[in-house]
Image (tube, rainbow, N blue to C red; front, side, top):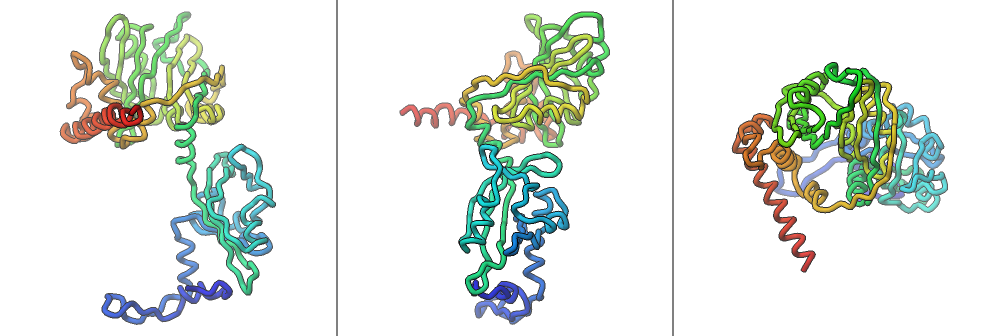
Length: 386
């Protein structure tokens, strides 16, 4: 074990020291490791790592840290760890002062700090939730450097918040006439299209299921086909004046903006001179993130309204957490395409073709998904009830 009082010991262990394996192993020949191996290993390490000296200057940042922080290596190493332009915050959104920073604690006490969590705003305006571990490198009891390793756990944090939040943010955005399908640019009228589901395909495309009672089946299909994102629009059913279609989108769509933020698209309201997008976002997600996403399609978009509504998470969230992405996509596509309806409006062959897999593979995904749902419904919830 390396003597922590020798600052060069770590480099020696990974440097030119002769290393021998156990007798009888395949690695028992003496060999010499390169002098710069420690630095090279740090640089390509899979965990973001920076090194801070005792004056608070960042003297090293590996490639992973550059990627996570969104800054060049030169930009990182030109800063101190506690400068205000790092824009780091705790879970409540309060700025973390230099005195509260874990590196300060390590320098002052010589004790490591593990599992420190905070938000960091990157130069591009995006936010990342990081968890870090900080440990001292000492020389005769004096802290010379602090090694800080950190990971981006934003996706896990967002998922945790979505599963634990009791509220959703219901938002409505409006854009101008340019988003109105040509066939609906008339003098009057308003049509509401319900977005039932957006299913991600393995090839990166999505299949979206939509319905309306405000347009005839033919007019509905025509209007959807006129939107540049959609190809291969298929009428699924028409019953009691309500028509449903399936549309493949090979590029990103506005509906996906809501899903990427952990929410759900709800509807599209179309008038002769404007289009409004309605959806739900997790209660803790800022509506400006959705506006930013929609603005890539429609630069003139603006927020019309937002309301925080109570929405307890029941079986749906349990199912989402239980299934693999492909199992959930198969189950969702089967349900919204009418595979379970009588008579069926989609066949197994049609669905497997959508997914680009064999009928047998699709059926396997679907059966596993169904079993998981039933297990959660009858076994897990039954255990809780008992």
